[in-house]
Length: 65
Figure 1 (tube, one colour):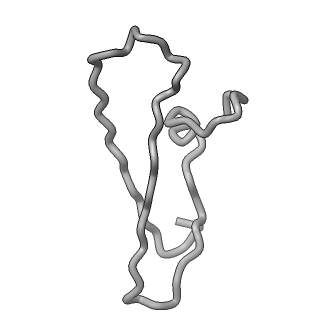
Figure 2: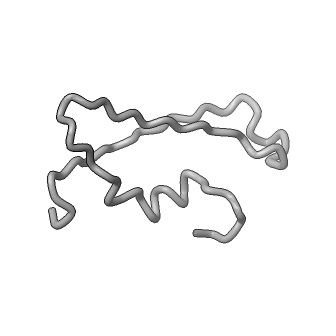
Figure 3: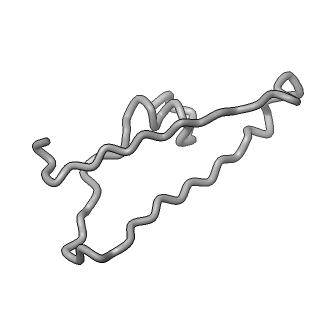
């Protein structure tokens, strides 16, 4: 989104994941895995800072919802 070549949390907020494929198996598990890496070029200004992340999932039965 900001053309830095990385998918950042900002990018995910501005362009959320949508229309993921559904499974026909109602018993199937769906897992979301995300790995975060702090930018090595960020410098020492952020040392000791904390980070809180809230993720909101909205599930719809049909993409028109």
